[in-house]
Length: 270
Length: 342
Ligand SMILES: Cc1cc2nc3c(=O)[nH]c(=O)nc-3n(C[C@H](O)[C@H](O)[C@H](O)COP(=O)(O)OP(=O)(O)OC[C@H]3O[C@@H](n4cnc5c(N)ncnc54)[C@H](O)[C@@H]3O)c2cc1C
Image (cartoon, rainbow over the protein chains, first blue to last red):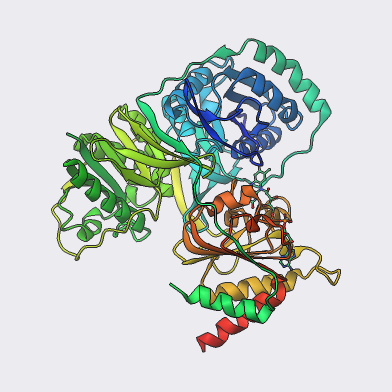
């Protein structure tokens, strides 16, 4: 029997990890040099959550999938050109600041308010998905805060797998220390799941899905609400790149025996 | 005056504090001394009284939540326990280990207390104010931050403080009762993602990273995947190193399964993987691209073996790069290590 699920995925946009990042000071606090022109991607762990959500929705006919994303409207539009081709969803954009330095509590407040007001969302069917950490702030707190604000006290982080039963309960695997998963069974929605990598490969681009998505994405972007985020007493004393550039010794002329001997010594040294 | 609460939890035995918790205790004692602040330690455990026996001379007030419901890590029960401890302590600053158990709940707890949280703290400084260091953009930019709002929750990264060590003894503990909400989640235990020996060892001195080169065609035109697996496992056996991997290698099998059966995404180091802490790291058959190397931020001494003299490691990312074929080097290295053992 299918479980009808209302899955809301929270996903931000982040600079492509291959880009060089340089911190700068802006009137609004710390930021990145050329932040608005750096190529951006959907936050990778949140992207895993999106793909898992789409697979789950497909397995459970009648389910719905929303993608809630806070970022500068123009950047969101750029990233959606690619993301929209992957899986079907309804975009709920919020026009707000980019990057890792704004306070997570403010971001969570805006996200929770937006989700609570989604037309047609049934709280009892709600699975709140996202990445367990972002690639910008990397704090792992936003989703949890949204969950608390929505009154959800079944929360899981570092999720790699969920398996539903016919009665609506699900087994969940969460990453814990030492390369293991903690196994839990939750009675069912509502729940918060912060995803790690999951088990699904990135879906291929499907232009038909892209076209169908874009029909609703463009109007949604046009009327995206604008969010201003409070600092909540957070101040930055310094923001800098790491200093340590190592002086690399590149060894080209040693035999395997010589290298092995040198490594044995290095491994044994304190 | 600040009042500091250190939240701790038991390890898998249920009756001893986890190492990361004892590290947070050290951080709390240091910070309380620096700020001349009151110090309270809160314990969440199945058997908190026994767990408290490692803290007889911490000098702190001890509060505990105890009972079977707290034997396992679960959001609803743990958040209720931490909330009760925070209310009892009325702390302005809450320090806690950034363990999987506490990272699951602590932002929610901060919200319940109308407080604020910062996580992955790698250092605490300042005498007048608390200044906390943490990394942004997956360990690429370091910031020092402060907050004027209270209560302020700070989750500390493991390995950033020495574990508090005390003579075992009896400690005076105040028990705090917790109203548990209806529990809808049951924790059934742990599952290792691969069969065979555990390869991720957070406490190991050495990290060994395997890259995609191990499974690629070698100069003889063939791939030698089985041999690669034997060499990697042989090295882990000889050194008890922790095994890391590049993304390209774990992705190769598709749908979460690696071509080397003992590797999973949990071994992955980097941007979308782990950032472990080890004194040394040895990379093999891995190119050392930035999205991988960001996961090496907390690795001390770094060496790499790569066929490519222009690989990323040579550009200031490793201390030594051996431009060589890893197959014969690792075979010889394993032989030397095994010989040294006997
Ligand atoms: C959004 C995003 C997130 C990412 N996250 C991560 C991440 O978390 N972790 C990660 O690792 N990557 C990540 N990447 C991928 C990263 O950019 C690289 O593609 C990846 O790290 C390359 O893996 P590799 O070095 O093992 O493989 P390759 O680039 O294929 O390099 C293999 C190396 O092995 C060498 N080699 C081959 N045979 C031998 C031999 N016999 N002896 C010695 N050397 C040999 C080759 O010369 C080569 O240098 C991410 C990328 C993106 C876009």
